[in-house]
Length: 141
Image (cartoon, rainbow, N blue to C red; front, side, top):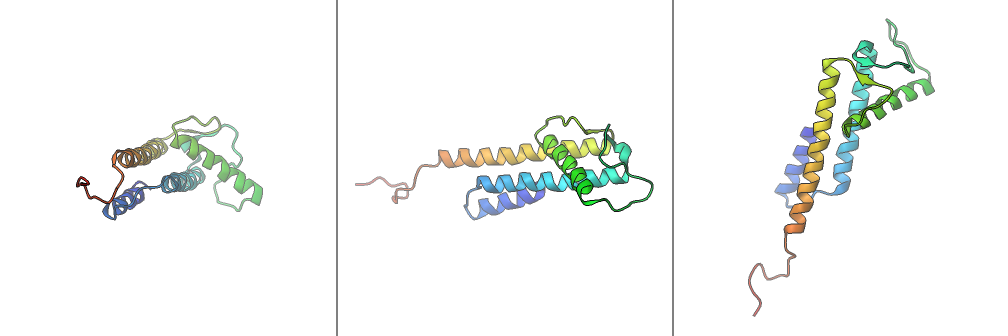
């Protein structure tokens, strides 16, 4: 996610286009969705990686198909955990219990911070640029 945002921002700077708010929101939501899936997958592979007191699904020794509502409620739980982690807010139902998950939490929070910094830097740059009046810096006579 961070690399994709970096490549997109570099493209925008090379073409002299501005970063739009919708682009920053897209990268934020993309990161929340991807890491939500990653967190859910980690939970199914290693349930002890999370402190999850009342889980919707308890993974067994073998993987099995989940019913439609159960699967989406579980996914929604981890998406909410991912969104809360992105903005550095504790999610009351799930917390980290391993170094791997904590490392992903830190990366996600840093990614959100970097996307916010890029957005702020772009708007500061735009507000500091004088409007083009067609004179290319020369004074009118």
